[in-house]
Image (cartoon, rainbow, N blue to C red; front, side, top):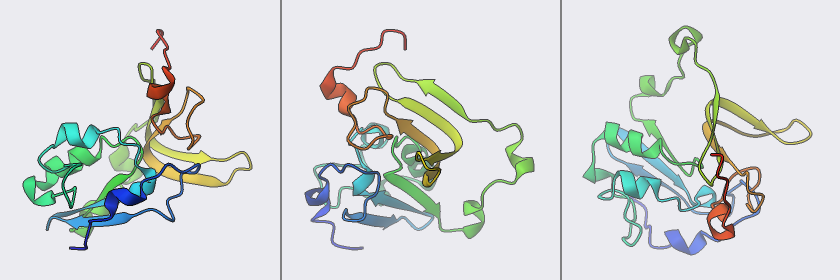
Length: 168
């Protein structure tokens, strides 16, 4: 495993969703590999709440995949709002996208979160104003407060800005 002692030194906020100058780490558990991209991380702590024995912000390395099973790791990573945490199965068959028939009536949904971002779930392609692809994802959290430095993505700024939407 790579030396992870520098992980949090490179997590300064960026004005873009790209993470070219940010740390990227892979953590192989044997059945699943968890990937972490510091440039996309907004410190929502969803992963920490899901599996505190695995995602330990004060420890180095901060991710210890040996403390949970593969399915639990996948479920925790799926709660990441930005795609900073992703995974690949060591069995290539598990990484294949579902066929149209397997997907059935899969649809995209947009959920307004209380005092926070829009949660877009389902296969989504996010485009900029000239039609260029910014990101393709199964889940994205989009800013609706106007304060994010990573627009169109949420970076958690709504909390500091005191964004309040009683309708959500």
